[in-house]
Picture 1: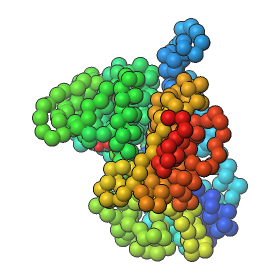
Picture 2: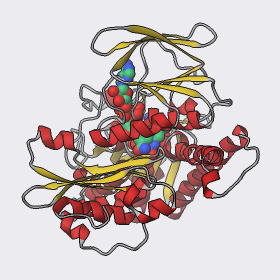
Picture 3: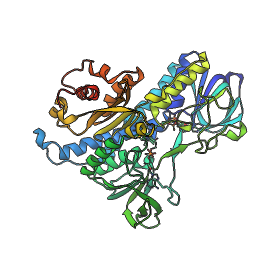
Picture 4: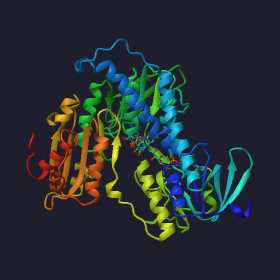
Length: 471
Ligand code: FAD
Ligand code: NAD
């Protein structure tokens, strides 16, 4: 290593956490490097997560819609054929364009991109095993760990990414499986189940809990979502636990049993998707050489300024506490750099939106009814269905509703939950309202353009403290 490789800050991991932090640090005039071992920037999100999954969700939705939802719109179409190779190519093009964009932003902001695997040698030195061969060492005043997460394996079912797959395999199948079993009805499970079901697979989702959607989704909304997805062809087995699997034959056999004891059943599948959550990834990072603490879920322990117990080594994104979401990682990256540069930074963890990109989408921010009840907080509910919204009617997209939860006494918004065609875009307004401590009346008295889906948002707010006009 030369003297030149002494940095103000080095990020280990070039995912959303690491690359956003590196760009921000570059903008702040800090001498910055980012170490990434994948050979591509953007991490899970750009390469095998958010971006490729949304490409397949969008295009599989179009394929499904053209087959099943055009006649009533006055569009007669001829034979519709799937070209899976081209659909995958379109996905790869989106991914490649975006990862190259990040490389360009690194150059623009004078961030050194070091391609290789980083491991701590001591508190200020990282050894990098370079992708192109050889090793280098970098020294840094500040180090930010942003090594992300990996899918949690299911004991006894070895992942081959062909027959037994994680989300990574689910984004790259070369043919549509006849029968697919999805273990876990969380967000990954439901998004990937939607894609393959739309393309023709018979999909069964097995979920341990009595509700789909994973942690955070409001109970009412989860029920509606399940009903709609079932109508689209997904099969659900709730309150059901997968106990074992056998992939030794030509297909895969999955043993399931009722979660609270009871009947056993064997499910046959050509492909099984394991989607039971993700866990922090720190393999080969040499944490033992610096003695950083991890909790019982292997998350790196940090304080409010993202510092590990070694104060100049910080940690952000999936590898530490909080929801495993790209936009959460991005907020933390900016805040961590602000702490390094100026000593202050901030992320409001109470206003981080979640979106499930099924059709219709499900989106929420703040607390749900189950959480408010368990905390004994008095709240009011206001709902508005898309069946009563003019734009949803013209679009023939009337499934879903907006649900507001606000404080009984003060009317301050506590949570917003949406299921509907454009929920993922609409939740931004809810997030802004929550961030600014708005009441439902503040939203209801804000003029919304007509005809838009956002009027359903305004009217649900109205329903919370008064009555909606159109329902
Ligand atoms: P990661 O993106 O995992 O990045 C960590 C990077 O560090 C990796 O590239 C890894 O190669 C690198 N690395 C690890 N160890 C080392 C080392 N020792 N040296 C060098 N490099 C190293 N979130 C959303 O908000 N919206 C979505 O729609 C969404 N969709 C998703 C879909 C799927 C299928 C999956 C799996 C996830 C999805 N997520 C989504 C979650 C999102 O991808 C993560 O929250 C986000 O990627 C976290 O960013 P990160 O930078 O913390 O970690
Ligand atoms: P998750 O925690 O959301 O869901 C996993 C589900 O699997 C849970 O509902 C759990 O009860 C169930 N489960 C666990 N063990 C089981 C068993 N043996 N049998 C049956 N069911 C079982 O995890 P995920 O869906 O894998 O997603 C991982 C992370 O990635 C999440 O944090 C998620 O937020 C993130 N992600 C986000 C998006 C998005 O924002 N659109 C998309 C994909 C992934």
